[in-house]
Length: 161
Image (tube, rainbow, N blue to C red; front, side, top):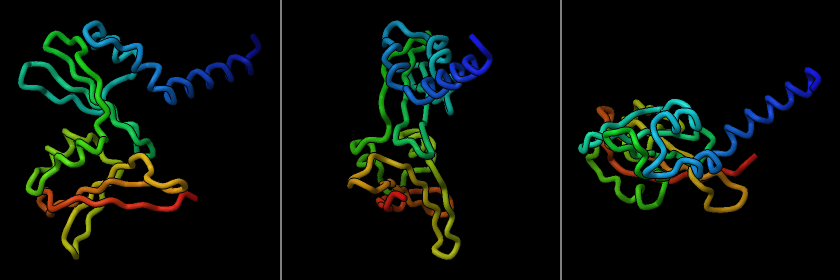
């Protein structure tokens, strides 16, 4: 194989890895996959959240442009128990006024962006989610007080282009 072919094959492999979470996630079987298997397939998690049973949940956000954030729950032995998509309507509906920024981050994962509005005053985190209309990008937003407590949620749509 010539050097150009090798370079193109390496590039295709890298694009395939980063663009095909579904293949890598499907290979991780709950009850069998271990922390080592997960790291080999998905890399290091963006965050590791301790669970009350001694296990942990690992966060794999696919933003800022992605519309998915995978939460992988491991038991205390480091064996995968479940894989969940965090950016769901059910999770959005769970967020309540008064929640801390940490609670929101634990539920939805790392936001795609954060903005402060000192004159309002508020802070807004947003996650890109599946579009609600063709030709648009949709964002789920959580609004916080300056000291980091939820005041409400909203959605924003923008035309692609």
